[in-house]
Amino acid sequence: MEQPPSENTHSKGPDAAPNAATANAKKTRRGRPLGDSDAREALLETARELFANRPYRTVTLRGVDAALVRYYFGGKAGLFEAMMRETLAPVLDALRKAGADTATAGQLPAAQQQAEHLMQTYYRIMGRHPHLPRLVFRILNEGDDLEPFAILSRVFADVVQASDSWLKQALLLPGQFDQSVNPQFARLSFISLMVFPLVAPPLILRRLGISINPDTLAALAGHNSRLFSQGVFTPPESAADQNTSGENLK
Amino acid sequence: MEQPPSENTHSKGPDAAPNAATANAKKTRRGRPLGDSDAREALLETARELFANRPYRTVTLRGVDAALVRYYFGGKAGLFEAMMRETLAPVLDALRKAGADTATAGQLPAAQQQAEHLMQTYYRIMGRHPHLPRLVFRILNEGDDLEPFAILSRVFADVVQASDSWLKQALLLPGQFDQSVNPQFARLSFISLMVFPLVAPPLILRRLGISINPDTLAALAGHNSRLFSQGVFTPPESAADQNTSGENLK
Image (tube, rainbow over all chains, first blue to last red; front, top):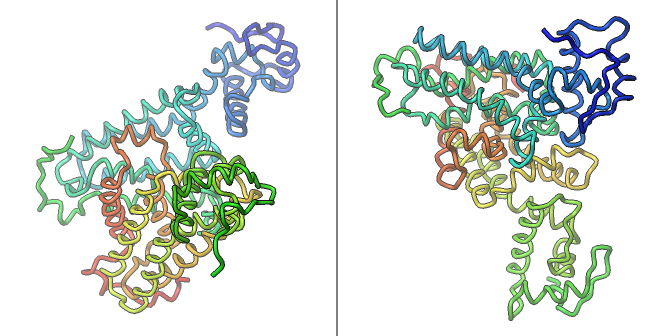
């Protein structure tokens, strides 16, 4: 594997600030150079703060080692994409695992547990990175002609595909999904319940007496997934009575 | 009642643009002067467009009759507040009516029907003013040191009070609310289900195949209120089994 550039490697791209990068490298690395994965992880952590606190276009790489950023990520866009992808990776894994489990197990409790596991996974990640949902929300609402929007669209294409795959399988399972529920609305409700609390105006949360922290989020994951499951899945006792063909679903 | 100023009344405040106001008065009024309430309503309608399409601080009253704005609303802040209050008035009425009905009826179907009526009322209003939820969301997220934030806080204080009153009464009713559900979370879920679809990034709605229009919103109100009711209200058959004291609720 290629080695990271030394502190003397000077950068040349449009974002380059060679002297600043060299000066800041010491701050980032503290004494001995960090190992490969440590240095990369430190850049991702810095990126989370940088991108959370100011608009994407005004984020510069001057506060970080630009040569390292280019080495690991190619530049600012690549750093942003990697930060998003790697932060969301556990959520994507949980979604893919839910899809695989649903395809093999096909039991009602499985779908409910998966819904809760997904919520818990998402909230555990976002509990560590509480600014991220607002960042995503802001970028996705800012317009589709911008670079960060294009990046997030790519990142979310994978999440949406995995989510489609899980939900379609869960919907098609005999007796699992309440056939009177609109499946598109069900997906919207799942996202609404999961995401809104993390992007809601602080005033609303204060008025409700809710402060978002890891404990609250763990409890909220349980609440949300119970509410969702009771609303869209057929209760076990009545599942047997239901038309189980699922033919009219897509 | 005092009469609206004539077209010759020149304005003097910091927002004043007397010549523009006089010139634009003709555009707004078309021939005969509009009646009192028509002129006022036309200003509110213009305000909805102005405030929806640009940040509050950059909205000027130059496109409208500044003297009329001062007469009816005192100025830009008053116009904004009146626009918000009057647009939300049917929602506030529905909330207050729900609170009054709950206090007298006290039956399970009542609470479910009220939840649906509230959703329907909110969506009917927002179907007519689809930019409004995003405007509110943006302002509430922009920070509490700004004038529009202070105005919205005042407007929402009434909504929150009416909502508190309804939900506390619904929660306290014997056998109505599932005692295992956290009432704060229940309120957050109601708001999440109701509001998120109207502020969600268009990308998410497109990917879900949902386009927000009055028909979609009417169907979504039904879906949301069923989902919410199944999640937080006790089903009729098991209501009798439940501890009905409600003592530990606030």
